[in-house]
Length: 426
Ligand SMILES: [Cu+2]
Image 1: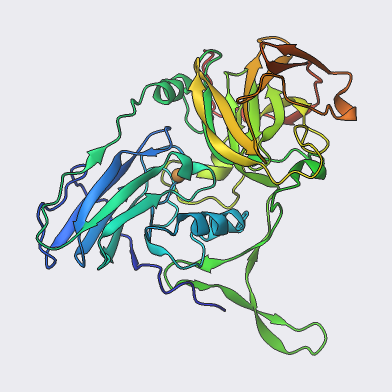
Image 2 (image 1 turned 180 degrees about the horizontal axis):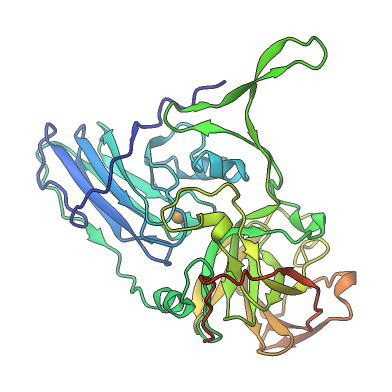
């Protein structure tokens, strides 16, 4: 039994509170409670409010609403704490899900739980006494690149500016979700893919592929109310004496920090932000999120954390990092941006910065386009022995184009033919 960081705030859950977006006290004296309301822009992996001001030492009541289809939290950090906190989150593996992706490290001012879609939490904390810019992020793996804002702590008497809103336009993903007809089996379209950062299933990939992952760690059960790990009584197999042992949740076979992209029912892939590579490609459906989000919206956290893969695999990665040259450090994901409607991933390995894009073909095969930033020549790429027959490599305008043929495998997971599984064809 170990107490979680005393820096963790008091977490208070209240029934649905109706509050105007980003309402908070102007010029609040330290004795007044500053009220802030922060929403998530659905599907965009961004906070709607990107900056808010509070007075040093003031009581703060922050209402965080997750209006998105993915789980999110909101973690306020001390000014220079982000690198250390994120590094700690990265080592949590699947245990993170159980512990809200809030590691036990210094530098955290306040943190919500990991909120399932449609959930809301009111976080009460005291603003730091020290003026400064306190970043807030969602610590769900991969989200902090875009899901971030700043809490400015101002001295008493200083005029507080009103909250700043994100300028992002909610278009693409909302459209895609509308097209899906059923959010637990979401679908994008061929031209406008749906991008989801999620835990992804691991369809028994070659373990070498997961060289930089903390895959398969069991998680100790944790009670957010007491902030203690949960224990159970167990008989010592040797002495027969009863003792307290940590209650453990068995690890699911999943990939944390994966980016799942769906181009409609005929093409989906998982690109991994830890290994910075394409993991697998499948056709015939996308993900069944029931196991991940729970049966109905708001029904609480499900028992299993990994969505089910629907359809059949047509490509799976094998062998070590193909871009690596000798003894490279681990890849570092730098984020992605939407290029012509589809994501272009950016990552660094050592001193080299890559851009990578998956270009699907509607019937058979796809292309993986890779360029090396600031280099006149195409990047080096090792084709795994298992891929030699399926992959053709050519150079094109300074980049590398891998044309990859489908290698169909038996279906992974049959789509449930329930009344709710209505999937509209785009
Ligand atoms: Cu998030």
